[in-house]
Image 1: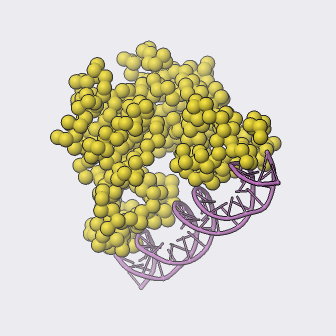
Image 2 (image 1 turned 30 degrees about the vertical axis):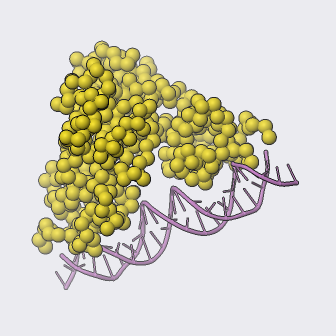
Length: 232
Length: 232
DNA sequence: TAGATTGTTAATCGATTAACAATC
DNA sequence: TAGATTGTTAATCGATTAACAATC
């Protein structure tokens, strides 16, 4: 029973991973959690795990884990389970951790500065190459090793240093206008913290909206509706 | 055809809103968006809206809107539509905007300071009554009008000023230990930014996990898998 | 009244779970 | 080989959409 290190054997074998279109949004939303738990298992030196073991660790069903992983081809081995290192590296590949993506941050306010200093990007293989702001008091300063440039120079900069994504931490009033400029610069991904719903799916760009206000309201709702007498 | 201002007529009429248990998580997740769009309509002075009109505004189906709103009773009127002010106030009620919830923030780092200064809480009727940190260099300072107190005094403070929720913007290493202390203080809601999955549903507390790293990874995935040759 | 639009039921679609044959 | 555990199909569950009768 030698530990598995070889290629996947599932039915997606001869397709490049990037071109499997049969992956549901629900599965994609769960991939980052697999990434995190596998990373942790690897650090703990665990070399092998079964769907059952992983399921009790993550609090989901073993069935779901097997179903999810199989969307991308057979990552495991019957009778053995999954090789942690191998599975981790396949998931990294899926998530583009090794793709060398580059990001810029638009808006050097509180949130922009908090984000640029977080180790999040580095851990996930995304490089922040610049920040931009319109405030003269901020332009020219450095935060977390990243220079804040004048928003007016956005187009110039992108010509020389193309970025894959932009993090929007600017007031929602200018969100639409700025996203147009970013698309024109060739940026294809927006991580949107502005609180304005952006949907550019039709324009060959992807948007991930993070709406903190909505998240807070969901907590509010549940606080108000879980207080003891819920089932009465 | 007089504009509707009276009570709802649906079958949930004689139940207090807080005790309708038939509301699916999917509906709850959408309520904050209704809140935002209705708020905006109100500011624009619009007094009446149909599910069809709202649907094209929000980019969802009219059917879903009617279905969603009906979970909580009949908020509209056949042949007329919905009264914007009335609907807005009912949704505020559902979301606890008038409930006078109080929050504390644990961790006065970049993210904690960014959050305390955001107008988000005030808009949603949540009052931040204190921040806590263990760093002596921060304790005693004020951010956004809120005093940073010593984490060691958490229990003392909560005895005198009970809070409904805590915002966790501290390193994930201490997330579990700190949430135990918070539960012991009587706090029933956690807004968790630590990146560690917390699940305290079993212990009569609610958790809203905001995992920014996961969100970034989903964007990564879609960037890598939408690049032109997707359907090949 | 006629027109409009909800409330609500039925049909469809998608996602999760269960079960088990394949196979290491 | 026997035991374990995946890959995969079928069954269930939940969420969305369509349709239309009720009614303002």
